[in-house]
Structures are given as C-alpha cells and as structure tokens.
Length: 390
Image 1 (cartoon, rainbow, N blue to C red):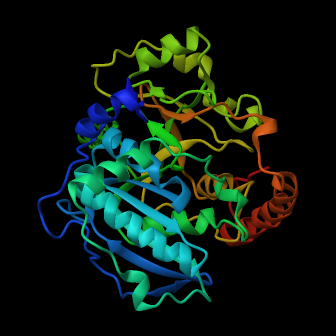
Image 2: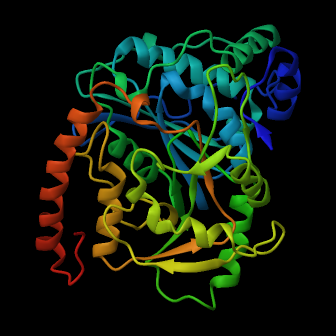
C-alpha cells in the first residue's frame, strides 16, 4: 500500500519516495506558457501554464483532474501512484488566489521531481479576474524551503475547505473539459483529485490496449473502473490506499472499504455489479482484461477510461449533482459500450456520508436535476437516437 500523507517521523521517507528534494535543474519552477489566455464558456483559461519537464503532451493515456488551491497537496501522492502524464486544471476565483497558486505550483515543481516530470497545469479564472504581471512572480527555492514546503503539504494545520464551499460556483465540468482540451491524448481517465487509482494502471492499460487491437473494432468503448471508499477518520495522519485488487479485497473483508456512494447514492454505482467483480479470479500479476459488459442505465455514473474524442462535459453543470452522469448519459445516447475491467479500480479517501456534504448541496442538486431533465431532452433532439437516458 502507498501512504498519501506522512507522520512527522515518516516525512523524510515520504520525501525520498516522492522525490521531494531540491531540484538541481534551474528551470523546474519556471512558467512555461504564462501569457497565453483563452476564453472558454465565460471563463479565462491559462492553458499549459506549467508543462511537464520530461514528457510530451501527446500521449496514449493521460489522467485528467481538477482542484482548487486548497487541495493541491493531494497531487504529489496521486502523481507518484500514477507515474505517467497528468493534466490538472486549477480553479482560482480571485487575483489573490491566482497569485498564490502560481507560487505554490512553482514551489511544488521545484521540490517534487515526479510532479515536475509528469504534470501539466492549466489555471482557470473568472472572466473579470485579470491578474497583473506581479501575479506571475515567483522566487527560487532552496533545500530548506523545500523541506518546509513539503511538511506543510504533508501536515496541513487547518482543515481544507471543500471545493464546493467557495464564494462562487465551482465549475467542475468546465475544469474537466480544460484538462482534456489542452493536451493531446488518445485516451483519458478523468478523476477528481481525491480519487486514487490502483498501482501500475497506466502501464497495464497500455499493455491491454496492445492486446486488444486485434480483438475490438470501433472506438466507442468506455473501460469501467469500479470505485470504492476507504474508511478514514479525522485522527488519521496518514491514509493507506490499496495498491492491488488483492489488497482491496482484504480491506473489503475487514470492512475498511465499501463501494463508492454506498450510503449517499447507491443506484449511482450499483450497476457496476460489485458482487460479480469482487468474486472474479483476476490475479494481480495477470494481464488486464475486460471482465463483463454493463448496459448503461440512469443514474449510473461510473469512472472509466475512454477515448478523448468522447463527448465533452456540459459546462452548465456546476457545484454538486449530475455533472458526471450527464456526460455518461450522452455517451450512452451516442452508442458507447461500457466494459468493466477485471482488476482495475479507484478509491476515494474517506466514506461519503449524507452528513458530510456542504450546506448548499440539496439546493444545488435540485437545480442540476432540473437542468439534467432539460439536458436529456436536448440530447434526444440532437441525436434522434433510439436510446434514452430515462
């Protein structure tokens, strides 16, 4: 298992494992594309503001994620687990936050060679947020400062606010689109930054694709990764995520893991068929394979790897509710098939509970439910498909 955070005694070991050392190359913190600004759905986007140090933007499979400044500390562990290209969109609703994010990303790249090597950063702001040149100023980072910076990431002194608890709506679908739009990838895995994939998934999926080329025809396929929740508590200073399916099943037996959204929206994940998946014979060292197919039904919102040519997310969906399912619905309407992989999975740190949501969740969910109803009618008119999302 891989720890996402470190205790005081384990900070040095984590730093060594993550490669959080003083970077010798002088350009690792540099802005690589600082002055390119584009407008997208009413927001300003600084695409590829920081590009990866040693990996191309044209890749077979890229992990796409999104966050605010408050949760950037999750990135080093995610980058280490994935060990492959990541496209991350960061939302900065004010000039002050924009400036803080530029500084934080610069230091993170200077102190973490895994992040520097693999992560492309895009910054997204409100249309009326116009950062000045001073917002792009950063300073060199020495070894002592890296050590303090890493410690602050590993041990945040205050609880971080939820992405949905901002003073403005969190544009999650727009951020997902930014992460996909500004990199060239054949396939994408779109995850929230608090989701962690199993180890070696990137490598195993590329091998899977190589074996599948002669077996599958067409590109309208979504490869589903069953999702789980890992039990944590506020007293946990470190979280151990299962690395393999066998480790996951042990935690499942010990009731330390349960299916994702088990308490808050079981119909949203039930079609994955967890009972079937957990009883499959799929050794950790065996080649990745499709275990079975699932017909998409409302309100299933699986996590999956699919072609980057798949429908984009509808940016009208913001905050909580129906943002991912709307894209899955459109994929279904356009003829995509959903195939569950036999030993790939993702894990969310912490159980999702009804009491754990932000205060405005119910109101947001009601708004987005109405939008989703209209959205489905739009799809029917657009595609005229015999498939529906009802």
